[in-house]
Amino acid sequence: MAAKKKAVRKTKRPAKTRKTARLWLMFPPKLITKPVVWELSQKFPVITNVRQASVTGEIGLVCLELDGLANDVKKAISWLERKGVNVEPVEINVIES
Image 1: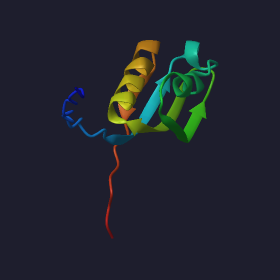
Image 2: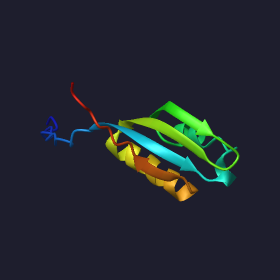
Image 3: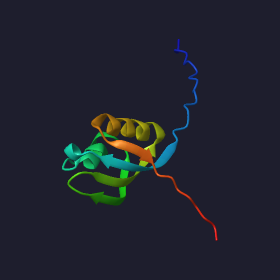
Image 4: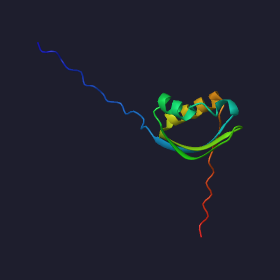
């Protein structure tokens, strides 16, 4: 007797959505000399793009674009906050002329 093959039911997985987040990162003095953005890119499957940066001896201010799966971007932001980086979304005002 030949073995019967069971019909395999394929279930639909939720679509993985991509997200691009533009963020202002404020680094406290203790983190200014640390490679935080590099470390972030190694820990999470996200693409980092530094859009603007200003670093002094007292503070580091970076405009960073993160691109990846929405869940990975969220985890990366949480990690930055746990490290002590202040994370704020970039507010974009578009004035049409």
